[in-house]
Length: 171
Image 1 (tube, one colour):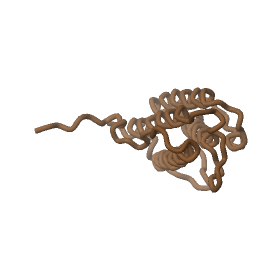
Image 2 (cartoon, one colour; image 1 turned 90 degrees about the horizontal axis):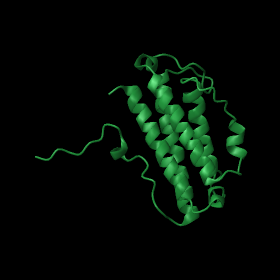
Image 3 (tube, one colour; image 1 turned 180 degrees about the horizontal axis):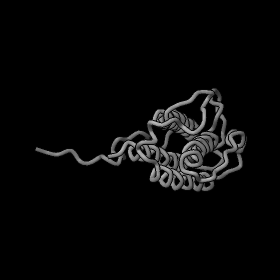
Image 4 (tube, one colour; image 1 turned 135 degrees about the vertical axis):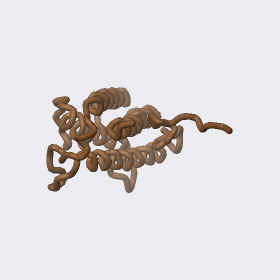
C-alpha cells in the first residue's frame, strides 16, 4: 500500500468519526454550548478541523480552490448538525480527490507553503495534520460527553477502520 493512500485512509476514517460525533449530539444547541474550562464547543472544533484539511490538503495539494476563513471557524455559531455534516461530507470528497492525485514522490518534497514560519516536507506535514485532527477530535468527543452526560462513542482511532484491516487468521 502506498503511504499517500494510508494517510488518506486515516484522515477519511477520522472525518467519518467526526461525522458520527456531530450526529451524536442530541440537539443543534448542544454543539455550541460552552462549558467551564473548555473554550471551543463541538461545532467550533468541527469547523476548525474541516477548514484546516480543506485548506492545507484540498486547496494546497489538491487544487480544489477552497478559500479558508479561519476567523469564521472560531466565530460562527449558527450552523445545525445537518449543516456541519454536509461540510464534513464535502471535506471527505475533497480529500478523496486530493489524495487520489497525490504522488508518493511528493511526500519527500517541500510543502508548497511555509507553515508557522517554517518549511516542511509534505509527508511530515501530512503526518502532523493527522495528529492535529486526532487531538481536536478527542476534544470534540470529550465536549460531547460532558454536554450530553455520555452517549454513544464515535469509535475514534479504531484500527478496525483502517483500509488494510482484515480478520486475524485462525490456525
